[in-house]
Image (cartoon, rainbow, N blue to C red; front, side):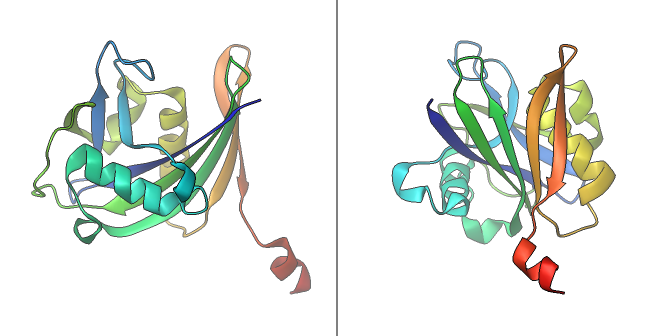
Length: 172
């Protein structure tokens, strides 16, 4: 089995809008969907998904790390693709100003979407599940959650768990 790792960011502005990349209809991966900013982790970044995320943000938006406040890992989502590829997605949340100067990349165009609209727009099931969990559970915490994505009667669902140091919690 192959392993594919990605790092993405939900970049949220002061109006509670999320920055998305509109993928081109002819793209080979997530064609035509709105996706959080991010992409594949390169070999030298394998132990540092945050660096991969910052690199992808710069490539896709022109934003540098100095433009982003509190970029924090909040989710690690696992799933098995139809081609039996194991996919691991590191999901960061951060804050940016709506007035930040953005540049479009050759990967697609950028747009802001209201956070509460995510479940009704053309995004992946993974994005919808993360947004739903964040709003309901994680928004007011600093925890990192691990999710295993699967199908239940043809509908995507995620089983969430809290990422913890079991040694630390078992000794207290």
